[in-house]
Figure 1 (tube, rainbow over the protein chains, first blue to last red):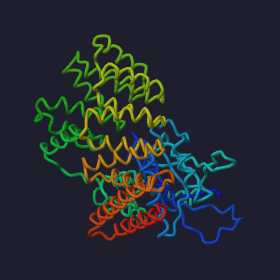
Figure 2 (cartoon, rainbow over the protein chains, first blue to last red; figure 1 turned 90 degrees about the vertical axis):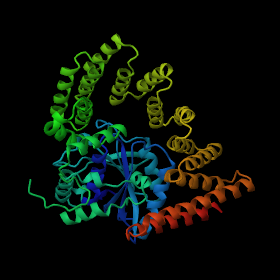
Figure 3 (cartoon, rainbow over the protein chains, first blue to last red; figure 1 turned 180 degrees about the vertical axis):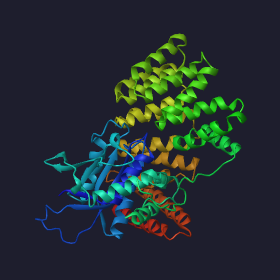
Figure 4 (cartoon, each protein chain N blue to C red; figure 1 turned 30 degrees about the horizontal axis):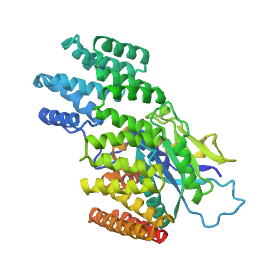
Length: 204
Length: 305
């Protein structure tokens, strides 16, 4: 089942990468929980409505990741969401390869959501105008992560996503993006990013 | 590009006119705290230099250096070059300035030329640590982690007190998932900085990641130590909770160990709840965080028993 990204999910991923250009960043993608999951609905895309930025810098340590996964899972249950995917941007812009950290987190997510996806952000193509999608999407097939072609169909509305992301990058909104690391530094920092979510809504 | 209406976000960069003294103070604070807020440094620094350069006295040189490095971070080669040229004029034979030239070449990804600059410095001064560290940074930028780790180890044999280097090495090892060696680096740092809660907490995280009962117990001890050193370190508090919970849930521990760890976990849970309640005071949004944390802690209690 392929995933689709909403403008909110896409722009927050890019804002996270833009806020910490010198670090690796990662986060979770969440989708709305559907009531009946028919076995033959394999062609229905999973719409990732939002993302939760997690960490910047060192991604390969376990304890805070476990805390984040548990906490965000609880939050998802309250909002009828499910953790459906994982995104990561590597430290070096030239390196957009899927690595062990991504595989490990995605494996954890797959325990609860079998069609989980990995989204790698290709920072080398990050521009203000966002003229092309800069993500690589991977699905799990036969024990391997295989990349799928990213087209406008990978987005709920690509031109909207492009317009919103570009506007938020220009206005340096990434300075206000909160990730889970920021939250651990100061609990008042809200990792659901209500302020940015509102800006996205205003721009829609 | 159509005009986007002002989004009205609170902390977005307003173009505030600061007095030159305020700008100077900001730059100094960022320098002292080693912040990498390069866009802000460029914003403030560029204005300070162009509008108030004459008022800065000798401070201007260190400001040129700070702004130059920030400019490299923001791909502002024009600004970086301006600062560099001023510094070259003032300090023509300086190794410190030569290193900045090297950094500019690194930013332009002209690594071979940058290496030549650093080798030239090292020819004249083999003890120049800055040049050696820049060479290691180049290896890192090129993705040559194994070589970077090897060079950094060699460097530390000579300069065993360089904390920045030990910390960098611990991060390189963590990225390679070599947690044992990362722990060793953090042990060095803890020995020389016994009051630093961050090193304790990071060491605990590495031990936790290594896994196994022994490492979990060590991690719990060091999370606790970090908390003793700074009782507001949330990572240490969460870490204490997680490690104690896992130990209590392990089938391999004695009844006493299980009981003790449930006590620690329970204490940590109450402290976490308290911290969230304090943080959530007055804000509607944070109520969801408080609730989520409470539920998370509840659900983990069940798995422990």
